[in-house]
Length: 273
Ligand SMILES: C[S@@+](CC[C@H](N)C(=O)[O-])C[C@H]1O[C@@H](n2cnc3c(N)ncnc32)[C@H](O)[C@@H]1O
Image (tube, rainbow, N blue to C red):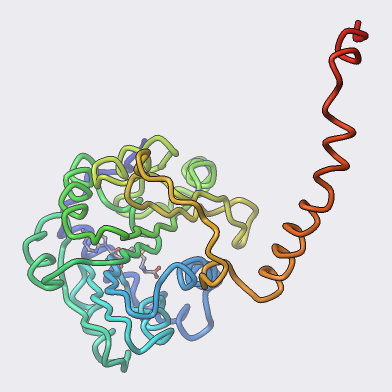
């Protein structure tokens, strides 16, 4: 992993505050990276979730998460007071609480803010900006805020794209900007008592430019429940349920035919070379 320079929290804050006008322009014109991130996150957030959006910036993704369901309760934090001030003045949503918090230095403030279990943590393009080894400690503490079924949703530049930037366009590298390999993410997940449940490369402006990743509680090897509840909403649309039903019926009809075809008699076994 590379860090361009050791940046103090003050330097990180100054860096993002100087970037605020560019972000506001992106808010007005739209931003494909954030669109993709929101598309990834929304289906993974239940309508009554308590969501913690870390490094919310000027609140673009935050606002869309909160708008998806009025029962969602969102806590959104950022290290930059200017960003949080901008959010408080421009994002009009009763189900969001914005607060300036440096999640590395002031975890207690974060804990006091959420005051209870969190169901979904969202970090849109943030994890690569948390320094190490502090990021690991942060994930350990974050793990203690999570409900049993909680998810941590991460979007960040793919390691290959980060390396490409380091090699070709160093000016775009931010105050702290890590190259995160799959192993790094697995180690962070472990700190939070989680494991990787989804990992994909996503095209944004370039092919395979970003990673979308879901961390969730480790699977319990003792308790494998059969997954045959057709009334469950997570099984998807009526069409999917219908095709599953037809496949099961077809399987019953085909079973004797397959038995005749595939189960060899002892003499047939003996004939084999
Ligand atoms: C690349 S920006 C992403 C902002 C926003 N999520 C988005 O996608 O537009 C990274 C954000 O993380 C915030 N950040 C960096 N270090 C932080 C820390 N220690 N605590 C809280 N926020 C932090 C920065 O201020 C910045 O707004």
